[in-house]
Length: 101
Image (cartoon, rainbow, N blue to C red; front, side, top):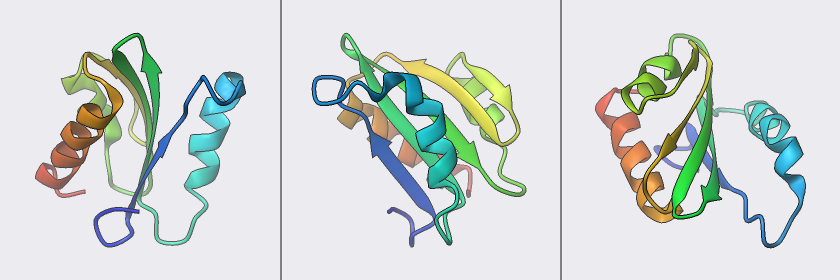
């Protein structure tokens, strides 16, 4: 949990699991955790990172996804970042903080 427990980041390691077909369910279920306002699932793609992001209420993650060439809806979006997971997580966390989520 990050930002006073309002943000949750999940990382999927495809070498350790075959849950890739369940990724969207994982990020959806994480939003049930009390106090979570934004949840993001990070999945490695050959040096890049796929991000599936969800939010509650007024938080528009589609705008965030669009800024990275992705898209979706107000409370559910996705995109790919040309960075490895750890750097992608730092970048996305900084964007979440900057946007006041």
